[in-house]
Length: 446
Image (cartoon, rainbow, N blue to C red):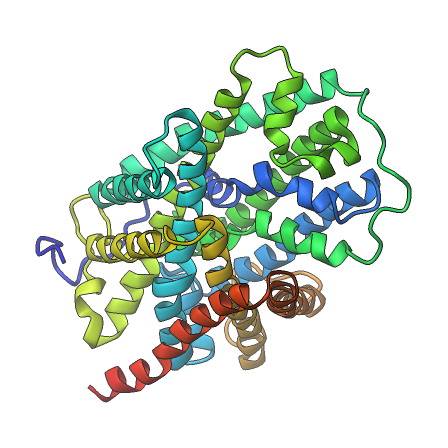
């Protein structure tokens, strides 16, 4: 660990405005999924209307979750996100287990997964040998970790510029696809009945990451009022963009063409009068992956910092470096674990898929627990926050039920469709999470 991280008593500074938070939220959500998964959603919906409805429903479910998190953040606007909510709602044991899981499975696994997607597309531009994807993944993690260690301001500046470029490219791709569309063959009638739930697994994976905005609360100006704006407007912006892009895919390829596509964005680019379109879309995907990685690195270290601040055995992780206003030690440890996961996954057939398998059930388990803390806070009848979830308890119940469904779906679908190999990856993630249970009792004893 770095020894020049400054005093343990350093604290986050409110350097982020509402636009900063919205840009970070959009960057956390928009990643490689919108370029990879629409074809799988098309393959599990029966028509264009149902296909677009799946994306609209994904936005609605995410908005329910964002409203729940907005009230949680309004009650406890602290750096640490779900860690702080769980600590106050369910106790230190739940918070410890979450922080441990996020540090070793959820966040580091997600960073590694997106890094592999970055490596896959970067390799289309310039290949670096047999392990090209893993090499690019490691380089991306190392470079963005170093940027975040340098400070909050350069990190958020890069996020704004890169995200603006990605959004502009996605809008242009969608509009161009709509302009050239109309000749695609229609999908056969009937579709694949009974698979809409499977389509929603892919849709909600593509929407994943909006909850990361909760980790910004300790660094947002007037957080009790502004976190609701960041979460809600971030989801609204992503939903609108996803609907536009998918409408473009449909217009250019049709539902049948999307089902047959292995790289839907690249196939759309081939229909446009653009030279070197494959390389261009690969560059856009790389940029999108980098913004997602940067946002995940930025927020992930905040949990580890809060974790180290609260548990004496991990005190060094609780250092906040005043220079640059950044949790340097937490960032360095997070980067090291993510690099270790990249190295391990480089020996699998598909590093991206391996990391998704590793993280999914653990991620949705703690999502559910975070949603349940809202009921705990309401039951305690504490002071009313600046924002309260409308239509309580309907919206929180819908969110929690969706979390339960996703836990069931990810495990059952993984075992049914991928067999024991997928099941082993799920098991490894769960075992690593459960290691945190005896570790909590050991550290509490100290």
